[in-house]
Picture 1 (spheres, helix red, strand yellow):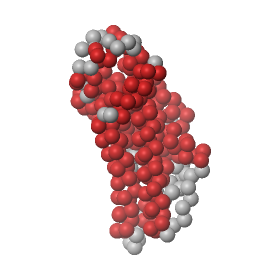
Picture 2 (tube, rainbow, N blue to C red):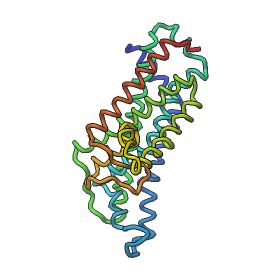
Picture 3 (cartoon, rainbow, N blue to C red):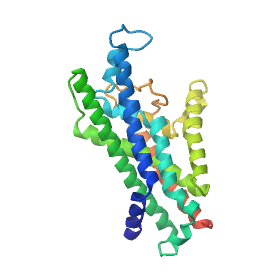
Picture 4 (cartoon, rainbow, N blue to C red):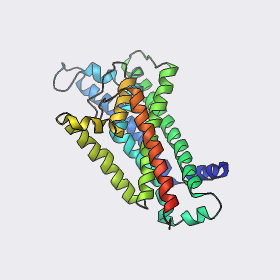
Amino acid sequence: MNGVIRAELLATRKRPGVWVVGGAWAGLSVAFGMVVPYIVWLAIRNRPTGSAGDPEQLIGGILPDKFLSGTVDLYPMFGSALMLILGAVLVGGEYRWGTWGTLLVQGPGRSSAVLGKAMAAAVAVLCVTVLVLAASAGASGLASALTGRPAHWPDAATLLGGIGAVWLISMAAASLGIFLSILLRGTGAAIGVGLLWLLALENLVSGLAGTLPALKWVQRLLIGPSAGSLATALDPSGKPNTSIPGVVSVSGPLSASLILAAYVVVCLGLSCLFVNRRDVT
């Protein structure tokens, strides 16, 4: 198994798609989470509070004491979609290039091959998580310096909790991407169905849950609302940031973490089942 993991880590490191998705998300998270709010604040800072929003609340959301929750707020709709693409790219390419047979003939069992890819995905997701949070922290510190505001950074325990929350959200989405790429035998279809699930279906359920109480229990089982619940738990105010699309709080941090962990276990378990039961060519 160790040999399988080392081989998959090497293959993951050499896939251009992994670098493209990870780098793109790091750049987008800083752009949408830090740069855009800062530019808007510059435009409205001398105006009274009104339809444009509260300038102090806007700038406060990107300062160091809230950069962690502000970064996690981007995951329910945007970050999870990119991580789903990452998972689909890592596994779906084996069908596109017809390399499943070559991989399996070298010795590892089918389940071991899938789990090796999952471990490589977990490491890749962790690297992207650290990169995104580091980039956001740097941008937040720069915003604090430019505005002359004091920098109150989260303590070590909160920071580790934020890294764990982002990694868990990302891994749940990546595991869904892995499962869909195996189910649909390819990358393109898996990405299409996955994005439809995360961006359309989940937001539709969240939008209707307010008027159809029967959908509330369904909402609690979705990746986006669970990610929003973790983001809310990390926010010093304890309230969801409704200014960012897709951020809702439907449960406590423990329940949300269990739901996301269940996505990882179920998706990877089904992936192993399908690879074992079906012809991989």
